[in-house]
Length: 166
Image 1 (cartoon, one colour):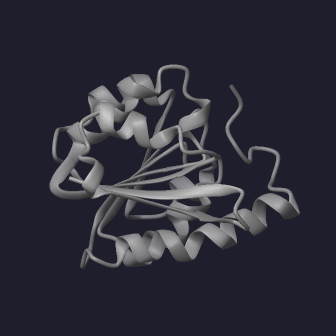
Image 2 (cartoon, rainbow, N blue to C red; image 1 turned 180 degrees about the vertical axis):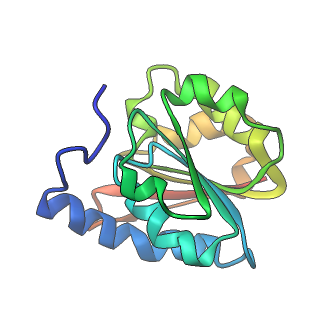
């Protein structure tokens, strides 16, 4: 599978990144200097690079990552599939795990969501952007309590933005 954005971003993709940025920053605002994992960060790691000045550290997972993204001092990257990369990460090592428009592309999402819970710290948050409500039952199945999942439509009602807290 080709990395998202390897051939550049379309105007629509750039607009989607712009719309998601505010919600992502709001979800991260509860942490003073978080450690962030971005699953499916894209070839340019646009969101993670945008967050770099506001986070302690960031890890991106993507099939291939640009040299520009790799040059950001507090970011590191794992090139490969989320399903393979997540088990290599230490438990309880991230304040925030992001999966922005990624969950729907993972063949076996439940296993990935279990791994997301495993790598989150006790007060951590999983931040998702999904195209439909299918994400909430998967979050519950992976161990997040329904009362700790907040979902709302955004991007003109085309997507759902979810934050699931430990």
